Length: 510
Length: 125
Image 1 (tube, each protein chain N blue to C red):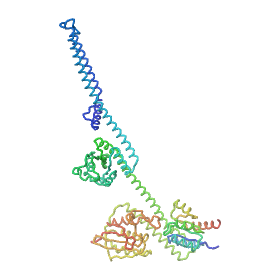
Image 2 (image 1 turned 60 degrees about the vertical axis):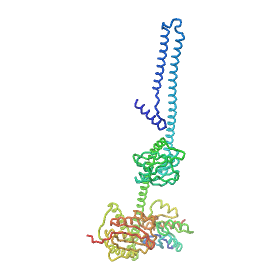
Image 3 (image 1 turned 135 degrees about the horizontal axis):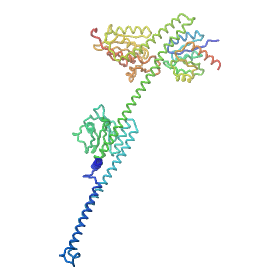
Image 4 (image 1 turned 90 degrees about the vertical axis):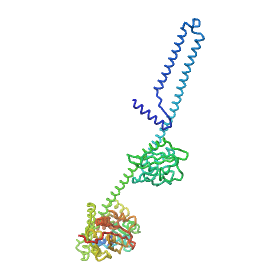
């Protein structure tokens, strides 16, 4: 009981101190009562003393019978004693009244402080509701800042968030546009200091550049400002700055209100961030899901198309009234489409294997010149001419099958999506050898140049050209496995130029 | 009875080849086109009784070609041959004015029977 009373008294005293009261002591009912009892006791004692004195005087024989009680002498003494007693009583009462009036003044100040607290709490609640009504980080920051400025009648302010743990960036600004995007290293300036100490800071007067180096520049100097940390679960998210208008000076009271507010604001910021992350994740998952559905649709279409020709060709072949040249043509159809089916399945298997195995590394010594000549010959044979310009021999590090697959995929693409003439060039260098596949088509738009190397991506969304969008992702994986890189740029003929950078095999490799 | 003329539109030359052989063996005249634009020109020149139309083609795709064909003053009947097998694609094809929608891979027998059925319908409107 005594403990809780003491705690309550300490809290009230703290309140009074913040409100500007000096030497405030809690008036207790018991002490007032005690004081009253003391007064009455003193009065009673005084009365008894006076009465006793009068009795004694009247009883003294030396004073004579006739003039016993009402002799002028006795009356004078009694009146004097009574006057002194009344005077003492009056002084005591006056003293007491003074104390009471002081207590009343204190009480009034305390009531004002409590009513301010109530206003502050209700403003906090309103701000809290507003902040929680939105989920977007940008909106949350806007509402936090405008609520803080309303709450403290601030002129301008900003919210700076911590980036990479090293720098504070003003992401939300009101009233002082010059500060937008300002960056302050942690430890420097007012904001930087608060981010390190995690203690709210009240700055009166223009900040001293020696004490706070690199303060965010502003048009009109500030004479009173506050900066409080935004902390959620022991993690510092950033700081909240509020600057006073020219005719206002922030107090310790304002600082405490802002600190309290910042505690709630930090939770909202953390929640908004979580929401943002969650939403990004969901949209990523949706995208992956869509890519998978598209992939299944494309693969089944790509597998169906050659099957249609093969099955159709077989049914037609069964006719007995078939001319010999038709028969040969249909057999060609079946063979060609069978091979196409096989290539598709091989691509799918390669993609699956690369996906499953992760990073592999090839270190064989491969003659790319010979590979280019062999692959170009095959392409010529299937009616897709390839011009090439390569040295007699050119050795790189990698794997023969892998590089051959890279070449086939790139040439396939050049014929499918580009336009002839399709050319292959080989430029040996001391460290790297560049293999280029060039065509004279429309080229690849700049913003798609990275995307086309991701799996299941086809720029031709209508699906006019056959393919499942795996070719280039396989190319990139195989080239990476050979220790090289691949990228696409504009060819001199305005088409696409796929450049494969491979490690030159200058020394003999066992 | 005169031989009916069928225009086969597909960007895959192999499909054109065996369908032509089949349709000619079944007593039709076959005309070929490998994209939507060529198809429209061939319709203008040859006035086929029926068009076998693929959907996914370069230059002018099947949907656009189908719209152009049905907008002609005396449009030939159209059968869509497509690897797009979803119900939505099927509805789209029929809504655009196709008489039938056959999904790939198809059976040659099925195509021939469908052609006969559609041509019979057009004789008895």
